[in-house]
Amino acid sequence: MASAAATAHRKGPPIQESPRAKVWLYLTLLTLQYGAQPLISKRFIRRDVIVTSSVLACEMAKVICALFLLAKEDSFKRLCKEWTLVGALTASGLPAAIYALQNSLLQISYKNLDSLTFSILNQTKLFFTAFFTYLILGQKQSPKQIGALTLLIVAAILLSVGESSGKASASSNSDQVLLYGIIPVMIASVLSGLASSLCQWASQVKKHTSYIMTVEMSFVGSLCLLASTYKSPDGEAIRKYGFFHGWTVWTLIPVVMNAVGGILVGLVTAHAGGVRKASGFVIVSALLVTAMLQFIFDGKPPSVYCLAALPLVISSIVIYQKYPYVARKKED
Image 1: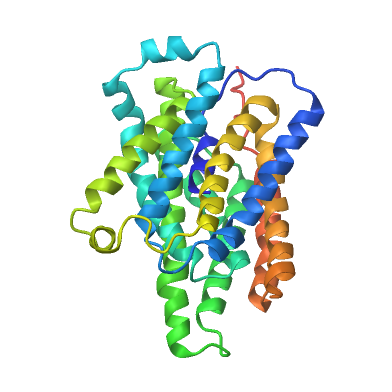
Image 2: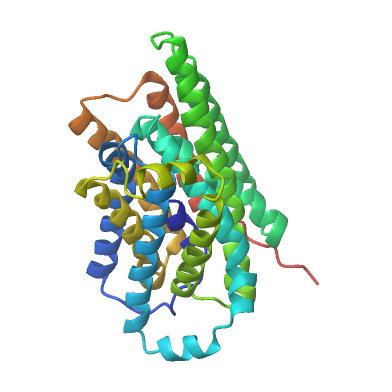
């Protein structure tokens, strides 16, 4: 999920006319992936799976998918000739390190929040993306967008306070939800906003395509994670129990789904004309898909706090997508 958000801000292949059926197929698949990812990850990634191992596997899956799609493009050889190590590190180095940390935090949060709560809180990355794109790129927001972002933060605060202090929960469980569920996903949202803004800068200034950046960022991010295992608890666990400790065949499902989701975002960016409207459709629909799947498979209806926060988040996203900032023309 973290990689999908970044790719939406990068330049993909030139937009071409595509049959509407193909566009809607990509949008539908992306919606299902985005909505089901929290539930699938929580169900198939066991608690004893080492976080770094699952993140590394996902990064490798992204590289394989991106290289496969790049190989199908006519520009593959040209891009390989133009590629330089310095250019790759300049464009993708910092966001890759940030995304590596973000993905690890998301894996921790998956295990300690219900799927809908996680999905709603994860949308606060929209606020932080807007904040950092203003700081880094000077990209302004319209008054209605600012109002929408404020609504999003209100929903996040409501949900965070409600879920972490529920009277029905034991004190220790509430602390676990806050420390290992809410705080990691909120920090991950901040990091996602920063990394997305850096990726947008790279696509505009360095002219990097989405697939090339996916390969570069996955590779650099993997190197950062491998370096961190030298003295981290995850590194000690890998050396003691092995890289695939706690894995089952089912663990591959969320890993591959996450990688495919990033590729689907690239396809939507390449084929859908209104990318802003398309992304809004996906986010809103995915939240509803998450709520429905959580009820069907876990038999768990949304909490009162989720029911209060969900319409606020949906309204915020719809308003934000519908009323972009429009620069006023200077009068002579």
